[in-house]
Image: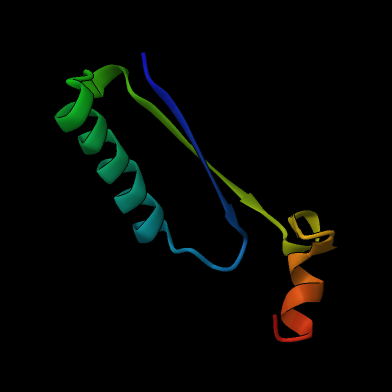
Length: 67
């Protein structure tokens, strides 16, 4: 049973976009690894930019300074 965890920053991904991610990842696992879509689990975690760090600072701070 494949388990895929997608983490994205919480910035307004629509329900339709998330559904497309789930469908696309499920199809990719079927096509590439011949995994059964019925037992493929895809979880999308949305993380606040204050809680996502790159290079020692949060994404919120990086974006505020234009990085």
